[in-house]
Image 1 (cartoon, rainbow, N blue to C red):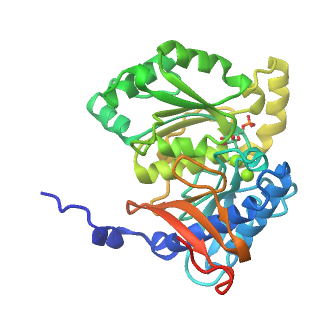
Image 2 (cartoon, rainbow, N blue to C red):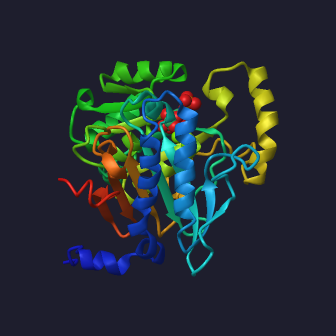
Image 3 (cartoon, rainbow, N blue to C red):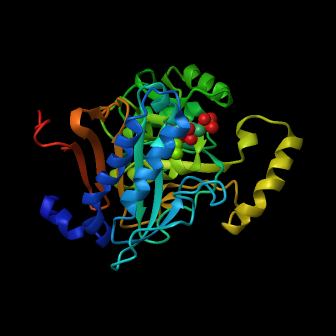
Length: 362
Ligand code: VTB
Ligand code: MG
Ligand code: MG
């Protein structure tokens, strides 16, 4: 009989990054979430993004790490902060990490005051995160029961190139339910028109989101969340962030780089032009004409063994409440954080701004 996995076992199996940094991780995403929350509903997504990026960067620079941003706000010339390649942390200590961030995932959602925006980040040992270029990724995300089913039925595997009906049939069997009982989350985009029709044709239910398919992706690995599959193309950074949580929780992400023009259904000529513009940069990351169409699985997206992930709610979400702001600078924030040892924390943090005027409240 294997020993049941206890909290003690988890402490022992946690790697150095998880041990040293998992407790701090939520405070970084929470600082960014609080900053963004002050801009909620003000209609200015760029400013909301800006303040959350600033807050996250300030927090990262308090950590005694040698960190490098691998997925961030863009290339150095266009993003002054948290750009790809930026070194963060004090540089003290022995911990070296690769970092992926999205300080404000769902800028429109925050600017509009609508549900689903979060602040999110992940860390892993160097080389532990796919060096995601600024190109779209097509993807499919499912939970761990599907992985278990695949192991028992080797000829029934989820495949990015398989018809939607085939994939959903596998998911339905794995979850022991009818296709009609599945919920598939997909971004409401013109480029997904056909895919949405294909999903509906199977009888599965569709949940269209205007933005923010990252937490729904994580939700596929959480039973009772009501989300069974996430499909469709979006940012590659979001796909890697999703994959880091899925790597910890169990489940599966399959993804493939897609040039934006392809995703948006442009002409062959325009696609060639786009390729000519993007390929030189992609080649420096090891992505060539030969391998650009390769399907990346969870381990390719997140090869890391010592991975930590945290997300904090800004506007209301499925299991993360919105940030609550009280008087005197007090704030209350919900987060989910997890590490490769297999520990998952749902937390409710209260930051006391002014002890006398605004005592701790329940
Ligand atoms: C995707 C999705 C994100 O932006 O990256 C999307 O994964 C970008 O797609 O959750 P569009 O260019 O079509 O808007 C989000 O919705 C928000 O960052
Ligand atoms: Mg962002
Ligand atoms: Mg985003």
